Image (cartoon, rainbow, N blue to C red; front, side):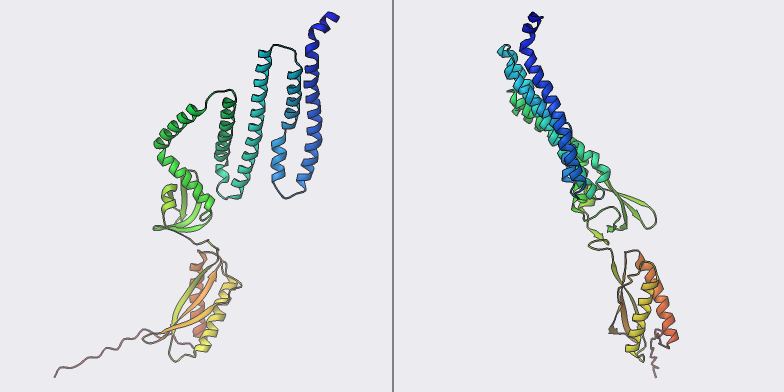
Amino acid sequence: MNNLYNEYQDFILPAILVIGGVIIGFIIEKFLLNRFKKFSQKTSSQVDDVLVHALKGMIIFWITALGIYISIHKLHTEPKIKDTLKHIYWIMIIFSFTLFFSRLLVEFTKIYTAKVTGLVASASVFTNITRIIVFSIGFMIILQYLGISITPIITALGVGGLAVALALQDTLSNLFSGIQILVSKQVKPGDYIKIDTNEGYVRDITWRNTVVETGQGNIVVFPNSKFAQAIIINYYQPQKPLGFRVEGFVSYHSDLDKVEELLTNTCKKVLEENEGGDKVFIPTVRFYAFGENAVLFRVNLSCTEYNFQFSLNHLCVKAIHKTFQQNNINIPLPQRVVEVKNKA
């Protein structure tokens, strides 16, 4: 029994240190994370939630790693074996921090994509790109620690990346154009836009193209690279309410003050009683010219979004016509005087 103890006594203390590190790490993680998690649930910030997620399992590993580090120095063995264990230890530490920062950045990427309308569907693409970048950096740090030069690797990746970029030029152009469109927030799904000769609602912005549904129910698909270069009118930016106007004319014999009052009240009632009308907007009447046989006017109105202007224009014209008839306001018919001269 004593011989067995003497044979393995060099390994007993390191084993106790490692096991003790696991137990202490487990206790500390459970205590700290539970307290931190309860605290994060009371705050509106998402940063603490991300930290809770990123630290899960990391505290146990790091405290256990501390026990391993001490046990390596307490271990009585050959220097080569000890150096190998140290190399393995530091590789594990670098990997753990790579995993920690990967979790952090991935969660922050998810939060950002959730805030930007349209990026949610492509969130996995961005999170995978983030993971690849972080783990690539961690892998290069490990190689550098092991004394392996990463310069040839970076050179090879640069040449390979250039070849891939040339081969996938159109795809990458559409990808980065789509990201630029979504991040700029100048156009987002649900907006009503006009691009070239097409107008309609933006239904989707994917990593490759932008889909617009026209008023006739047709789908127009634009490659993101072309969409980003086009001149676009966004009827929902900077705000959805849209001004429009109804034009007409009245006889020169009309009382213009009365006409103005009737137009204001009539159009305000139309806005208040019909869908899409801006309920708080006060119509303004402007007499802007003397026509051939009438005084020309326009009524400035407002609707809650672009498409409602057409139905409201229709209703306003009908309401104005009825109001003028009831109040004997004359809308003169077009007249043209023709003078005929007899040649004697």
